[in-house]
Length: 232
Length: 122
Image 1: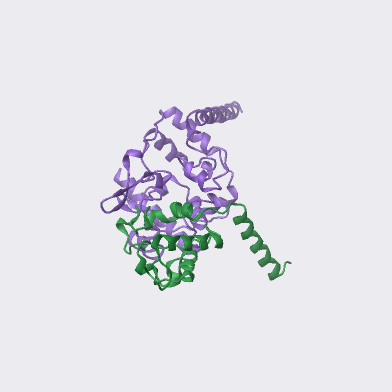
Image 2: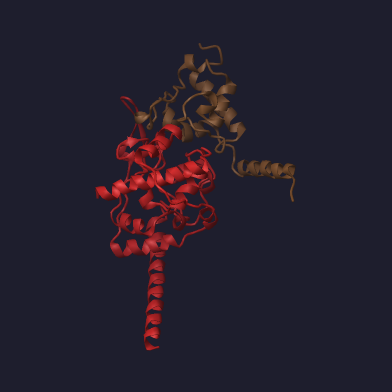
């Protein structure tokens, strides 16, 4: 009986410290992140508001990200959007056409481990779109890289805007070779199904991708992420 | 049980509400936001996404090529995507992004860029 009480006290203690860390994370978010990230919603409903956005909206971060990826990335951030946000603000004329102007891209601040953990916990509490996530079902399965790339590029045209390896693919959307490491699979499926359900003015079109193809794309991004994990 | 007609009516009203909830945007702003990523900030078909594309985007300043497309065809390709007019899948459908009125404005904007009309390049 004494052991049970001890275990219960331990659990309550962990839960309390987790909630405390998340509260600290919320304070950090408000103080240091709110200038570039929307913490409260809604998503932009006008182009002017879209253009003013400096980083991804965070108000549905708990429906979107993987907590373990957030913790790691916040300590050692890398660029996910090759052309930044809003992409058109970071484009200049070059010899062969438009090119990204790297002088306009700012590096993301890095957080110490305890702050990164606290912020990740706070972000994971933000879940206003549980219904969109609950509507998705990811079937177990896999796809070869070549078959996945055929669907992704040749049949669906996604590579027009997204890189599938560093320096290969489009630049106006986020790179997707780490997508499955950073995003929940149900979010990936839901966002492909209707980007506008999450972000009404986003420059990613709804391509009316079929259910089987959504499954293929989720499995393909998982395959790409495996390569990234092995490459580390 | 609702009839098919009432379901259709509800869908039409729903789609209408989705677009009416957002103000109509000027064609120039829509073009900058959605089209320049591939067609280029100057409309010359040389956007930041083209490097690894198997099919290059249309140069909207090319009067000869653009005068060969009717306004209806341009409307259709914007709304329904390249495959709807036997063109590349790399041109996506924008029907869930723009209202029909915004697409009509975009067609007119493209005619300004090419300085041309259907069947008559300068």
